[in-house]
Length: 551
Figure 1 (cartoon, helix red, strand yellow):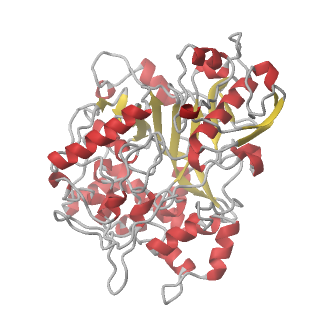
Figure 2 (cartoon, rainbow, N blue to C red):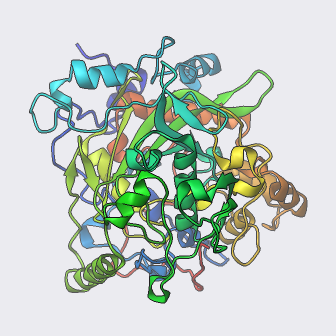
Figure 3 (tube, rainbow, N blue to C red):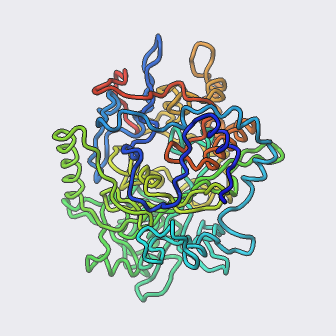
């Protein structure tokens, strides 16, 4: 008999809907036809007696090729198809105060400090279940085997951010440090997270087919340069051993940086090194600016907030989710442009037609741009399980047709610069916390987070973070100069919550876990969202008068 946890019982007694449809996770059905539209898009941006807030600009902005989705106009109007005009993210409106009061601080700390991914002896129970005892409800295509990604990361990182399994062998995964994306991804709004990247084996081998840490390190730096479209500092490397002029000085000498210089129309090209260089010559390893190599993988764990004995808020061992992405198809600039044009035409010709979600829970759902996204999430007992088809559908909203992402992602463009960062920006937050990282700057030289605070009036899209509002704004609504100075020197001044808020956010999310109501929203909500629309009218304007650029 299935155990009903306190939040589930309370929801039943109150008459609130509880979503526990986990008997068939692979069912290709959406109870929310607009599951790809995140709750942030229903934000009420208007303010009584003042100008509208504009959190929209960080996602809907002028794009950079090969992303041709210039969607600045979505800062001005809620341009939703008819089925998406009703806000079905009902968890945003629930009052969790009784639940928060019912859970002790000790109980929630004990919970988040449990590692639900790896045992003390290094085993990964989720991987064992996927490969040895696959439940029928997880088997999307009912063929008796798991056809998707099986977690193989050890979360044991060396001095260069490379991951090792329980036997000490390299897994190919490498952690990268980055500044959190503005808004919901600030830990003060509910979660910590991390990002790992892995390139295909050919990018890890030298030209003789042998594994080479030097070759892999250089190829990852080349990828960083391609995504950032900027030069990247590296440890000194002998170019003559790699047969590539990395610093573009016309000689094969010692290089200390990768020069970004890719303009095919001007006959300016770049090259990978090692086995990938040979594959590139035979067109088996295509390269272009702003694009990851074919076969690139990403892991992204979303976690609770831990609070140490001295009050430091940091990443907790317990995972809320483990998200996975893989680039399975190479898409050229021309194909990207054609896709954006087709989507624009479809939106014009069929304004009330929602884009279908393509994929399944094992291989993942597609963003139509060469990537597939899958992942795992807590079950009611806190163990990780595959996300359902509907739960996965939310991935394609942010990783698909919006102007801000670069080849489907966000992290690499925000990676800490190699020239002046700990371990050249290749490390996991368990090795060094976020404290002490300077505020990232916009292209115009202004502080990115200060700019967000100014445009939004808070640290989240809903303007619901009372703690940040009190810390950074005075009684007139003006930003406090002293706090902005602290922020410029250390992003933790803004992005990390107080211990009290961290504990309450953990409890609020735990209620969703016990309900298994992810399809109604998975944000940790301390109080019903006041600045959130329950429905949107056709052609409704946001009240924003001036479009802004994310970059």
